[in-house]
Image (cartoon, rainbow, N blue to C red; front, side):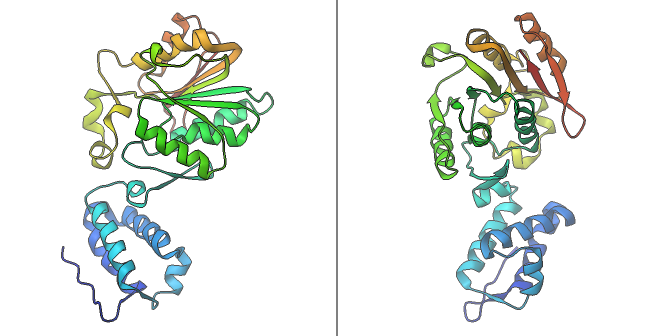
Length: 292
């Protein structure tokens, strides 16, 4: 679709709104297109839904028009909105995201809120987030448990760089380390933790067929997928790490593949953990496993 921008007069908000609808509707459908359009206008023009209606005749400058159309073209190509704007929301915080990190999911936010509620009367002294990505879990928990020593590890230096920026922008202090949980020799010496939490890769390669293009074509595969023959390899490695580094009475919390919740709990019991509990997410899927 060719978009023409009149450099002599600019375009009104109403005209831009219609142009965006024509671009996005064939790809994303009515409901999703509307949500994407209003988010773009909020991001670039600082107008909420009511503002867009009230300012329909307001003229948008050429530079802003070009930026918005360029962003919309990326959405037409199925790039996730969060990568287009470079922002995601999690636990009341605004975080930077890029293609080196997964986009924080509602399920991950739900897990983090669940943990905060479980530990509200017994704040953990030390926390570690394994496979931190954007840092969303570690930073949110540090905000809640300000006196905790909070650590986070990831195998990706690029992800850690972004996570460090997110911690700084949200005025939190998290100790970030580069390491591979599958190779504990790559990790520094660690203290005992009261909470070990992780959202590791858990989507089996055979499940790629179920993934939407905006995920499959843009988000980092290393943070998503595991071989079908060893789908619990990260849970096994983290469980082994937790056996050595979880304080007595401490809590181990996982986000898991909805089809492998019971298998994950059984694995942890075989490793000697107790009080294993499989919990469902807001969609009713077995998404979280807790153990001690």
